[in-house]
Length: 84
Image 1 (cartoon, rainbow, N blue to C red):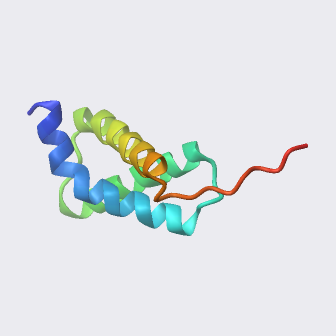
Image 2 (cartoon, one colour; image 1 turned 90 degrees about the horizontal axis):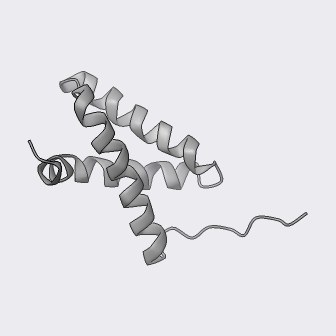
């Protein structure tokens, strides 16, 4: 299966997961939210069918792509970090 087909296969799950995690953990570091999203998607897949290990890298990059898209579009609004 090519990369584009994998992105299409997982896109709706990734988008829903990323939006839910951002709504619940907006102030958490991005790397933590990435791991949480990947873990949630894998846990959900375990109930249906295991995400093949070869697909995990693609799902992870798709999560980053979706987050970047939502950040760039302004859908995710981040508070300015306090300066010290």
